Length: 184
Length: 295
Image (cartoon, rainbow over all chains, first blue to last red; front, side, top):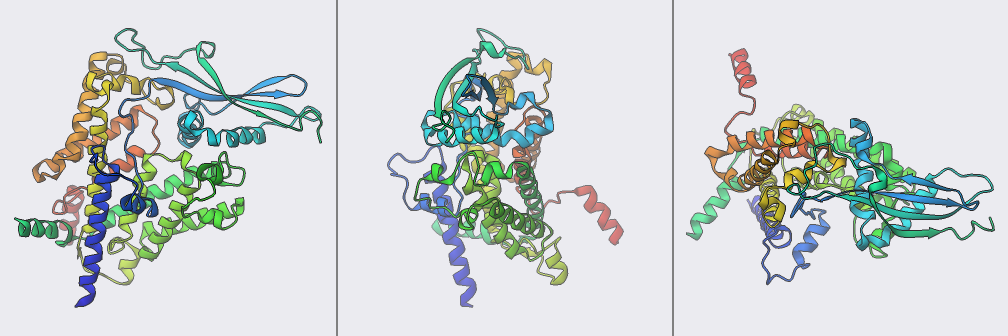
């Protein structure tokens, strides 16, 4: 007789903890008096049930953006390494490649994620083809974007594009390769 | 009053319902876990290996508190492949209901290890899969339509608290998203759908008469938030539940048609299917035909 009662008590405790965590840690209307990052945050983290439901909210992004790298070789040659831009890929490849977009656009380009910029540049360094006697000297990461105008002032047709030279660009990280000059 | 509330709580979470609802969720969520894992395979080493585009150290610093089986096995590409192999086998077993509880726990542990290894590639669909799987492993999900139930038949009813938690989570997604959107200017002025459909990387198929009309875009914006609010609240009213589930499924199919947000819409459709009332058959025609065959 005892076992089912204990089991039910544990289940009720889990239900109450989870519902409280949803209301206090996840809900957009969480009480202002609640300090946060307490037991319920620990519960969500330790069970891997952390969550954030903010897709296209509070407003959808108004930027079409991507990240690319300018790779400079010792002889002065410069090439561009563009991280995948989904709209340029066939439909099926977009499904598989979406994870790269997520990393590049939602994480890598953000100023608050500067702690992962060096890893991103090192990744690109590993990906680009090696040229004998002409090592890579630097990798510069750029974010490039086009701001979608307010449709009431300028309505863009569905599927519109802006040529790359018209995109706004900003260099946000440079990786200097120390042994490019000496080849040691 | 308090007694009445306790009785309602008890009835909602523990009054037995047919086991087929949770078994259906096991199969559908299991299939989605498998699909998600298979679509990660082409980029496995870029996402999780020692040469991944972000290291766990850079992500978390020295005190990463998370379960990361890949790192615990040395973090090599071999470790990545091993954890993925175990994950795929466990997810397959869970889907067909073979050693359901054990395979479910292994699927969950490997899934969160994979997710902890690289947070930067995760999306809302991954989050939804985690909570659905978490609650399914507590439920008798292998009690029907499974290898386990063929070996050892179980009772046809169960206390549905785990399924109820998935339902509450599902309603919470809609409610929280809708409230968050109501704080956004573009959702209030009706231009949000316009902006969302102009994001190049999310484009799939267009429908010119609608997508190129600002009036239509405004109605779509407001209808989306209205439907999300209803799915987060009114879905608990029994007479509204089925119409809302069907509207929600149509809404997600519409987004799936027009936008490239891999698998999220399908996962949400599965979660809506999980809201289907226990006393109403999900496939009425099929069920009627089966009854006539039996008689």
